[in-house]
Amino acid sequence: MSSPRPQQDPAAKQKTLAWLRTVSGEFATATIKKLDETLPWYGSMPPGRRSAVGLVAQAGITSFISWFDDPRSTPWIAADVFGAAPRELLRSVSLQQTLQLIRVTCEVVEDRVQDRDPYLREAILLYSREIAFAAADVYARAAEARGLWDARLEALVVDSILSGEYDDELPSRIAALGWHGHGEVSVLVGTAPRMLDVDVLRRTARHLDADVLIGVQGSRLVLVIGRAETEDEIAQGDQGAGAGGGSSTAAARPRPTFTEIAVALEPGFGDGPLVLGHEVPGLVDASGSAKAALAGFAVARAWRNAPRPAQADDLLPERALAGDPVARGTLVNRIYRPLKAHSTELLTTLWCYLDNGRSLEATARELFVHPNTVRYRLKRVTDVIGWDATGAREALILQAALILGSIADPDAPTGRGKTKGARS
Image 1 (spheres, rainbow, N blue to C red):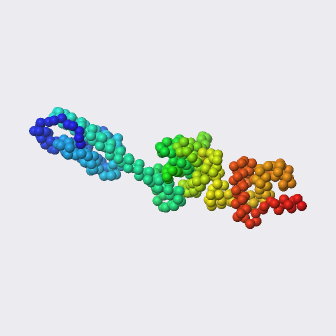
Image 2 (cartoon, rainbow, N blue to C red):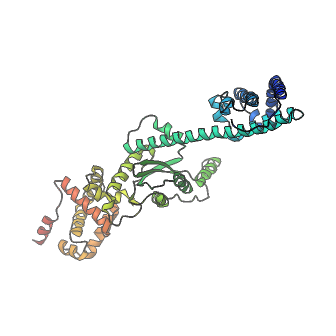
Image 3 (cartoon, rainbow, N blue to C red):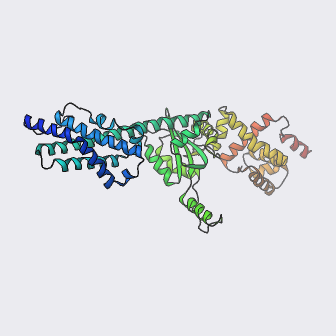
C-alpha cells in the first residue's frame, strides 16, 4: 500500500492505535448488527455464509489497524481481508454486495471515531478507497480467470464436435457454458478474421433466437449454431399449460432458418469461403454437420461463384472429386438410388437430358418423345429427389450423382442400348 497519509504525532498515534485495538471487537459486532439492519441480502444468507461475511468484516478492521500503524506493511490488503472468506462465499457474493459491505463497515468505524483524532478519519477515507479498489481487483481477476476457463472449455467442446469423439462429460460441459440451444443444430465454417469479436457474434445470434459455440482452429472459424426457444414459444407453452394443454390463439413468429442465421453472422467472418453444414436433430449429432461443412470449406474455392454462405450439400460434386466418401454416398443414396427405385424411365430421361446439354428438343429426339413429355418427366424427377435438373448448378450435382451411381451399380442403365432398341 503506497497511499499517502497525514503525518501525526508519534505519541498520539500510539495512543490511537492502543484504543483501536481495544475496540476492534466492538467495531465488528456493531458492523454485523448494521449489516443485518440495512442489507436484506445479508439477512437472507445461510448461517455459515453470514459467519463468513462477519469474518471478512473483522479482517477488514484488523487490516485497517495494521495499515494505520504502517501503511507499507500490507502491500496487498485484498489477501488480508478476503483471505478469511471461503471460496463459495466469493462466488455467491457479488461485487456490488462487497462494496456495500465495505461501505457499512467504514460507516460504523467513522461513527465511532468522529469525536477523536482527525487524522484517524482521513486515514479511514484513504483505507476505504484502497480496500474498494482491492475488492474490484479481486473480482476482475476472478472474472478474467472465469472467461479464460470458459474459452478453453468452449474450444474443447467444439473440438469434440468436430472430431466426433464424444464422452459422458460432454453434456455437463455444454451445460456449464450456458448453452441455450433447443432442437436442431447446424455448423458454420469460414475464415477467421484478423480481429475476432465473439461478443458481436453472440449478440447477433441472440437477436435471431439462436445460440452459438465458437471455436478457432488456425485460420478457420467454426460456429456451432443452435436454435433457442423464442419468447413467443415460451409464452405459448405457458398458455397451453394453463389451458390444460390447449393450443394458443396467438401466432408465434416464425423461426429464422439456419441459412438466415448464417447470413446475419457472415460479417463476423474473414474473407474467403463460408460453408453451412446440413441441419441435424441435436447437438449430439452435430459432428455430421461439422464434417460436411469442413469438407465443403476445403473445396469451396472450386465453385467460382459460390455464395456466402454456401450450403455444404451444394458442394457435393467438389467434395466427391476431392475424395470425400460422405459426399459420394450422399449423391448415390439421395439421387441415384431413389430415382432408379422409382422409375428407370426417369433415370434414363435425366441421363439423356444432361448428356444433351440440357436441351429439351435434343432429349426428345433421342428418346422419340415429345418435348413436353421430357419436361413432365423432369418435373417428376424434381418431385422425387428435390433437385431441379434445369438449373446449371443442380445439373452438375445430378450428373455427378449419376456418374457415381453408375460406377457403383453394375446394372446401371446406360440409355444407349434402349435408344438403339427404340430405333430398331
